[in-house]
Image (cartoon, rainbow, N blue to C red):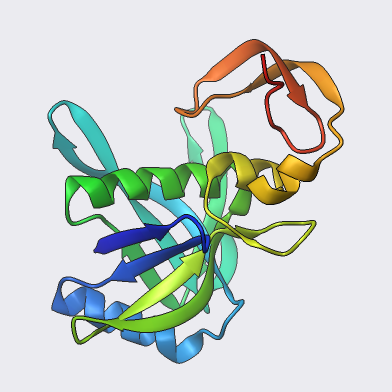
Length: 193
């Protein structure tokens, strides 16, 4: 899948590059309307390029969410499972696309729990689908960044925030946990030095 990021519009565009991807996006287009959420259902290892491991993401639309439980050694493990619907396995075509897949995963895992269908567009005679990851809880704007999705506040609203700073732990850009940070407990932005 070729993936484009429109930071200003807060949208990812998924452009199919194979017949299978064209079919999956066509099936999604048939059941989705603007604003519908496509549930994030985990990841798998994709490629290893120059020592970096990339991932593919699983999303489900129109599926029934259930749970699976297994007993593994002495532990009981339960996780969500999806029955029916359309499964989208988001896998980047090029390294640039694979990097965007990793960003989408981080935002889904730490905040949005899925992608939200926005619209379609034609690119090179192929129908592409456009998604945002979350809507700002203050203005309803589209969001694509992990920090925005984790806190539910877009950058525009964060810039207007009357910050209430506190000291503690938070994620960095690369999702490592960093401590001894002073950040706003309303919008999650770090206090300027």
